[in-house]
Each structure stands twice: as C-alpha cells, then as structure tokens.
Length: 281
Image 1: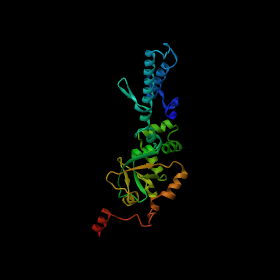
Image 2 (image 1 turned 90 degrees about the vertical axis):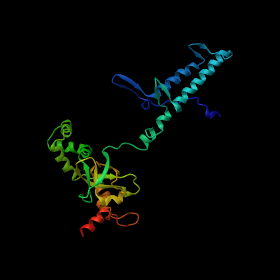
Image 3 (image 1 turned 120 degrees about the vertical axis):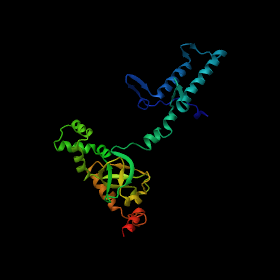
Image 4 (image 1 turned 135 degrees about the horizontal axis):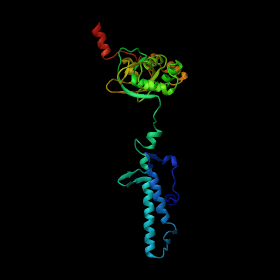
C-alpha cells in the first residue's frame, strides 16, 4: 500500500541534533551522521549525478541502481531504528534516543529535575518536634543559597553576589548564623514516593543537623508509609511568601492528625515507642 512508502523523510530541528565544540574539538550528534549518509546515498539515485545518466536498459546500470536503492533503504533504517557503528563507536538512532530510562520520554517528559530540591535517606529523629525535620547542613546551604545571599547583602555583610558566594563556599560562621535565622520562617516540603494520598507530602520547619541523612519524627511515619530501613525522601523549598503561607496552612504536619479516608487518628505510638512507655512505667 502507498502509505507504507516513505517519499519525504522528516528532518529534526537543529536544536535536537546539536553540533558543539568541546576543547576545540567539534562534536556532532549521531543523527547528523545518519542524515549525511542518507543524503549522499540518495544523490546517487538521482537521474543525473557525477557518473552521468542512469540507463536502466543496461543490465549493469540496473543492478547498480538496485544496489544504490538498497543502500538508501539501509541508511533510512539506521536512522529510524537500528543505528550503526562508526570508527568502532555505536551510533544512536532515533529509536535509541526515545526508548529506555535515558530516552526522551522518560528523561525529559515523564520526569524532570526540580530546582531547589534534594533527596536523602531518612533516619529517626526522636528529639524533634512533630512539625520539625532535620536537614543536613550541606544540603540546606545549597537549597537556601539565594536566601542566604539576600540576607548577607541586606545586612551589609557583603555588597555583591560574588562576595556572598565566596563566603558560602568557605562555610564561614556567619553563613550558618544567617541560615539558622532563615530556617525559622521557611518551611520545606518532604515527599516520599509513591505519593498515593495527600499526606504523602507535608510541610516541616527544618533544623540543621550534621551528617547526610534527613531526620524525621517517628510519629509522622504512618502518614508517609515510611520506615527507617533505607527509605529515601525528597525535600522541596517553597520560594515565594505565598507558597510558604500555603504550605503552612494546608500541608503543615501538625495539622495532619486524622486519616482523610477514614477519620482514624494517624499519630499513634507503635513499636519501640510502646516498648519505651512500658519500660518507663
């Protein structure tokens, strides 16, 4: 059928097959190599080329024409589906760029990197208040860097963004002091995947802690369906005053006392907390 015959080959926009220079070396997308091969082989099929006019009445010319036709088809197949090898290096076809975890769909459309967010393993923080979480210092200083720079300039400690970044990079004591003041009024959102109901993401006031793990109050674990056997959680920073106010009014962990589905209380002591009560009494 006619719809199976490809007469016009779509060409990707240059932005999707970039040519860049790295250290004086020009690096081109593999897709460009495929298009180049198709153009060269397709020109051989032209009635007039460098070799003259194809005469299909002669057996040799007919065989040559069929051979060139097959080469064009193979070049198109390499572009769309199979890929090839150039100088021992495999070239990625259009299909290779779409499929898999690193493909266009999963990497750029179904999921994207989020600014002002982080991720780490959660560990128990029994000394925290219900509405608090422990945020690693190194993570916090990166997440709240714009706020730190703003406060350093407002307080007259530095006068340029560059000078503020130098202070932050050197981890000067004033940086931790400013960050501690910022965290008193800036909540963060903690999310544990999969987020199956609205309690899967809640707002907490962060406290600076040493190490690289996020500290979580044990009583809020049932809402997240979390435990401390290696679970990871994502932390997000609301940037505007409006989003911070909304987080504290709608998502603050102190307000999430009952399960929205059944109305049953969520903050119930379990496991080692019950054992501790028994031991103390």
